[in-house]
Length: 354
Image 1 (cartoon, rainbow, N blue to C red):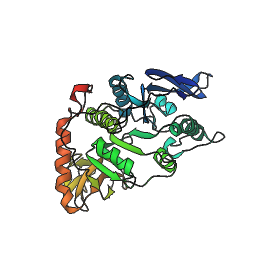
Image 2 (image 1 turned 90 degrees about the vertical axis):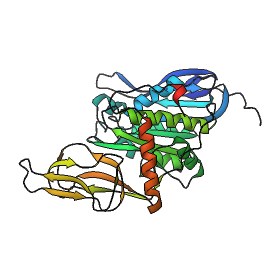
Image 3 (image 1 turned 180 degrees about the horizontal axis):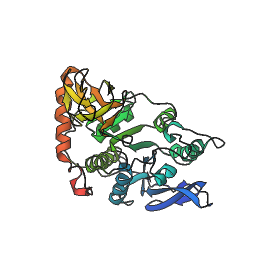
Image 4 (image 1 turned 60 degrees about the horizontal axis):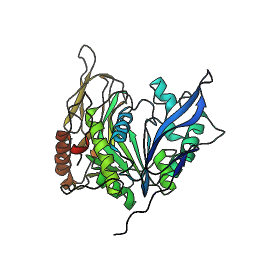
């Protein structure tokens, strides 16, 4: 096997990071009303030896906090002297939304529908343009970390283009409970990066404005496993990976009436066609409606607010080939059992990674 070549300095936002060094860089994006500069904080860890340039980004939606903690933990585990290639870690992309604890930018636009952006467009377009040209386009692989929207929670899962062999290999290495071979959405980071030939994993786990220890732990372990699969981190002997559990389709089950919801199934549960998902009734209990599963599947997303309006999306179900349903449930259960309980966040120590 040929020995890895010595790495080269990398340049981000005018700052050079030499091999074997790590550097905190602030990407200038705007000013506040006070003319106080607003910057995207990022850390570049440049390994001594050549390898991929991996971007791990979080909080493109400013209220999605799990990824911020994931990035912090990963940075604590990576040593530039043992790293091959370059890690570009961006814990908060949407700094406007993060400051306001909001999914959106001040103009209510969604940053993840604004790529590749424009220097003369809206706030969202300008921020997207800066981030894409100065960071995204300089990377060879991407892991983009998300949670569900406000008042929803997601089972840890990956959205990925499995038709791309490199993306599929990254997804296999990551080891999420469920993988969705998902189409891209116009203006998303994944769509524009893939169009440039950059493989992207989009990770979803947990809910907005909350830390979820299980979702965080799975993401940290998954990112490290991807880095090992790319040759960036030393590999370890481990048991054979689980086969990828790929959903053939997904759909939301919506409320058929207004009221107060009482969920009957948990996130990650397998449900049969016709099984009761929830009951919805008025505050006095009148006019109770029973919400049923349209077909057999697994709950990968769930509404968390007890108050619902007619038409609200309540349960996100993933559907599998018949023979894969039991396999999917077993895989999900085994992974969830390995993780700490919801609530308190526990750091992932290097010896425990698999």
